[in-house]
Image (spheres, rainbow, N blue to C red):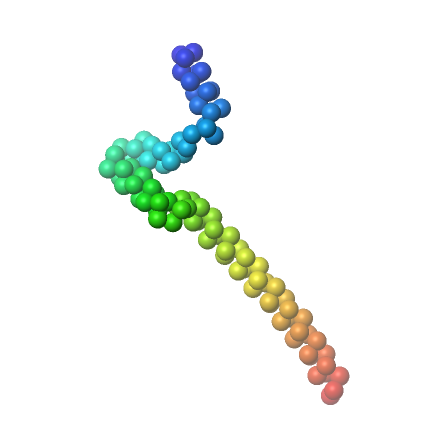
Length: 97
């Protein structure tokens, strides 16, 4: 039991030394579904995407979400500008009457 705890503790400390997270997804898939074939396809497709694009699927998701956040921010800025511009123009129109 002590050896297992020491092994787990050392894995936690040394997790940055190796890229063990690549196997984490397929390991969870095998644990949940018991389907080794599905886990193999998952690992293979993740590896193929990383080799083809240089980014992991998770990095693609993060960049997509960041792009959407920036787009939303720009839309809010444009809407704010248009609202203030409309208010100014309404004041100018009401002064001319």
